Length: 159
Image (tube, rainbow, N blue to C red; front, side, top):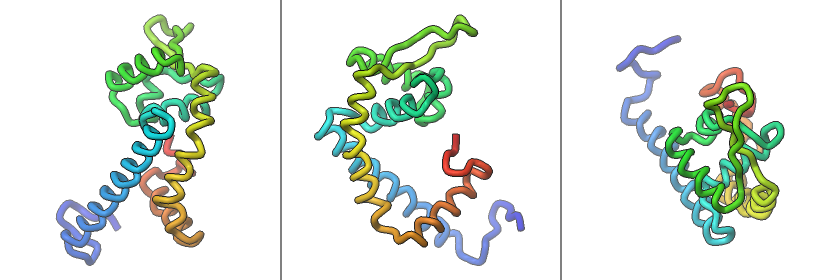
């Protein structure tokens, strides 16, 4: 059944908005905790951690800047500024794309990989403490099923 604007699934619009706002609050709360923990323990912002993480999982530890921006949910200009900082810190490098003279790759350096390895347990501890450990295995499966509806056909990775 497809609903049009203004139609409801049997609940009131305000009940639906409560769920939406709860989801927003959960995301903000978890993000704030992760950000604070990573900054205090590793002097690494959450966005920087996400960039390093995406690069570490990519083939040859490299991604085109446009693809990386999409994966970390940053604007192109926002990612450019972040990559500038990470490059100054020696955590990433830029490389020209051989097939596109205007294209650039962001590449994870060995120093960036080491920093990510150090910060990984802090990140995982935060995700577990703020989210995963609060749900039993059945609830986690239900949550995954619901989120997969938002990213159909994507399995566990919306990219």
